[in-house]
Image (cartoon, rainbow, N blue to C red):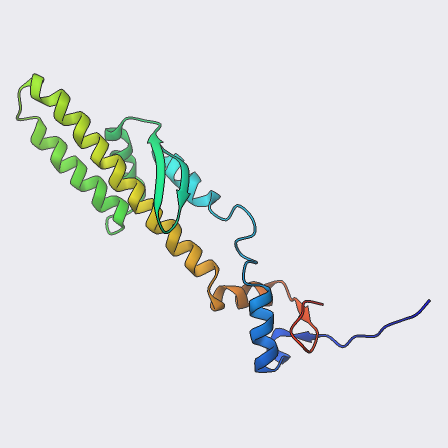
Length: 160
């Protein structure tokens, strides 16, 4: 049997070089789980089911509720200045314009407006997901996680 003693350091005690190594080694610490679930849950809360996404390319999904109900839920729950609320308000304004049309025109235009609303809303959520990912993988967020969990490191920046 042999005993090995290792000196460990808090992140703030490391050299700058060791801090860089620690940050590189822990780059995915905040995204190595289903980090996007809270955003998906938020979407479901207003009646939108996100089924797939790539933060830099697309988001796919469908309405669980009617487009009109989704817009109302966003306006009620998301606040007036966020992108989803702007998108919902734009949709509602277009929807009100349709009320001036004949019933035959309404159905086709309603479907088109609903589809455009879905696309715009999915784009809003894609951007939210991208921003969330960018933050979670930022140096600031990684350091916050390291410090909050009181991780310790060897002198060369490896997790102890």
